[in-house]
Length: 122
Image (cartoon, rainbow, N blue to C red; front, top):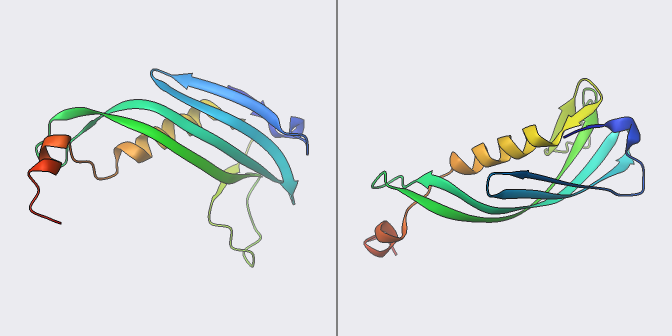
């Protein structure tokens, strides 16, 4: 689902995107200085590999996301917003954001229930 940023106003624009067993639901709202606020929840389950035993297991996801989308290059360095996604074509592809958030979660460190039980670390 692609949304043109010029259609986003100060009134929240709701969205919902689903991918397999994940739901990405929230809203877009104009903030200031070509910045659009995205607030959403990411919920569902994904398959990940345990970083200890390499077995695949299901991971429950319940994340809150909040970041800004810049219509063009973000140049306000003095404010130093760290969570800014730049849109160079004045559109935001919510499916691409969902996919990248899933990949970010998968790249994190995960351990399965068996490895957690047998861990010697406290």
